[in-house]
Length: 154
Image (cartoon, rainbow, N blue to C red; front, side):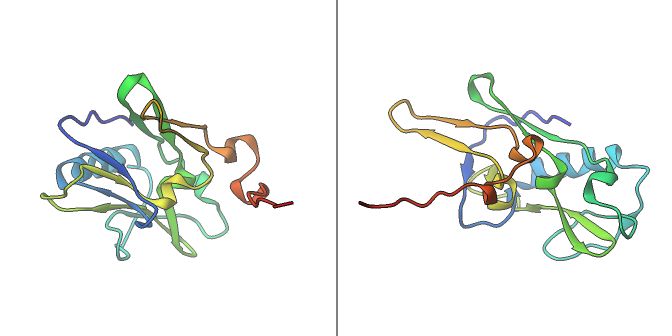
């Protein structure tokens, strides 16, 4: 699933739990998710999420076969957000698209929240004003929880 967003800014947020999209972008994403998940039963909305699906009890999110979200960034970089970072389990048999409608007048078209950044390494190159990122650590059978990020002073 790929959507081209023009005339917009993107912000990474360590304050927002979930990605927030300006209304015009949000509607496109939900429309594409609706089409891509036609074979999956819908569930009632669970705040703050509007698009929810039923998954069979005892089955994982992966069994829902949710499409990846592909962000095409400046410079040709591609960031793939898989179902583990796009769907939030909100009940024993309900998962919701973990993206929130930010309204028509959002300052930024896209605000990437912490849930979507989980289990990715982000590399900030301040000298060159660029951002790099790893593929999902889950695809490598690991997660950020397996790394020791503490520093020790001598």
